[in-house]
Each structure stands twice: as C-alpha cells, then as structure tokens.
Length: 322
Image 1 (tube, rainbow, N blue to C red):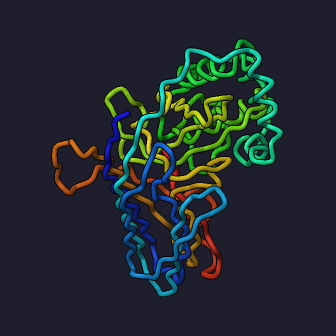
Image 2 (cartoon, rainbow, N blue to C red):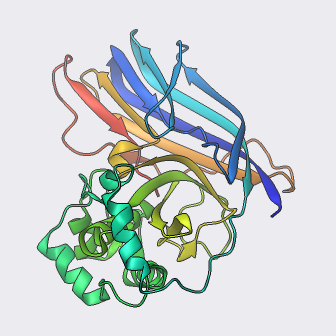
C-alpha cells in the first residue's frame, strides 16, 4: 500500500476579558505511531513561553502538559506535525453470523472490557432506545454488515451543524435535534454499539484530510469511531461523512469518549470570560504550496456556567471537535 505524507498545523487561541493568574493544560495533538501511521516530527509552541512536559497514558496517547503561573490575557498554541499514513487493507464484503460469538469473547477480555462499558457521553437513555429501535440496531446478519448499515444510518439521520451543540452536550440533545458535529455523531454511534450491540468500540480524536464531499468542518479537528472486529482488528467508521477510515484519517488519541481525549483540556484561575478560536490545516506532501494564512473556524464562547466567578475559581477550557 502507498504511504502518504501529511503536514498538519493546529492553532488554538484563548483570549480572556481580564488578566488571569494561572493556566494549566494538557494537549493531545501529536499523531500516534502504529501499524498504519508514523509520527515523523511534532512541535508544540506555547505563548506565553513555558516548560512543556511530555508523557504517554496507558493507551499510548502522547500528552503535552504545561502550566503558566503568571498573569496573562491570551494563551496561544501552535502544533505542527509531519505524519506518514498507509491505508489499511480493504475490508471483506462481510463477516459471518458466527462471528458474533467471537465478538462476545473479545468483549469479555480484560484488554477490551472497558471499551464495552457506557461512559460519560454514551449512557443509556429512553431517547437512545427510541433511536436504536428506529435504526434497527440489533444483532443480525454479521457484525461488519450491521456496522456498515449503522454508519450510513447515522449519517442520513443527522444533519451536520456547528450551531446545534457545544462541547458538553449530551447525546440526547443531538438525538432530539437530529443535528450536531463529528463529536456528536461519534458519541451517538458509540452509545448505540455499546448499549445494543455490545461490541468493544472507542472514540478517536484526530484530523481529516478533506475532500469536497466531506461535510465535517475542514478547519477543525475531527472525531470518529473504531470497533474491534474478529480477524480484522480495530476498524474505523466515520459516521459524519459515511466513510470507512483510511489514508485520509490521521489519529491523534483514542479513549472511551471525547471526555478522555479532547485536543486541549485545561483549567485557569481568574474572573474573566474566555473566547476560543481554532484553525486546522492538513496538507499532503504533493499539494501545491499555500500561503501561511490558515483557515479559521467561527469563534465560539466557552460552555455556559464558567464566567463571572471569584478569581480563585478553576475553570475548565476545552474545544469541541467538529
């Protein structure tokens, strides 16, 4: 399989309405290295300047951690990466009905049981039950065929909208509106798989090299789902774009849901409003050279309920995946 080299630039800016006294943040932007993907270079620039500590969690996600103790009104991050991606082998047309028994064995394994357990964003609810009935999310045919159908059903049932939800929205909100961003699409699919198909599955945070047919935002991070299948391993499904993941999907971090792998998670101290802007650009090595200006997503306020508190309050700051 041919290998494609990508350059990624991910710029995040937090602006505060008043000086804040401290910022502590974890960053999960470095592409993973695994069988189909190799992280070649990665740099993270932080302003104000600070020391950055790097470590890996138990799922081998690379985390950059820093703190800024002095007064400041802005925080700017620029992550730059070079990554090589090789497309996985083509999937078979289907598996067999007998493979459901193998799925059960995988689910009971100590290595995978936590990826079968409903997490913060994938809890059962009557609204989820109604959607499962509507989409016929049941064990039938074979596991791969059911997942193909579910991937397409979510794509056709929901409308992509950056205005419908925010970083903390529950799946019920997205289901009621039938609208959301890639984070919502991924959470809905994970919740349906875990609660009704009982298969090991995980949330993937990363980047997508965009084509005109993609409906997800081109200037933002992306998210999708991976499901563990007999004889195939972890297979990626992108319900936002009705795709099986391939050489255009670049994995940065994996976890049970968004809560475990946001691109940024931080706390700041201060009596201030916070405004976030994000720009992401992904370029293939054979693309024409472009100017330095980066496409920028629309500015959005931080989730409600975190402003106008005492200067000692710690307030979480994250960015929604689109």
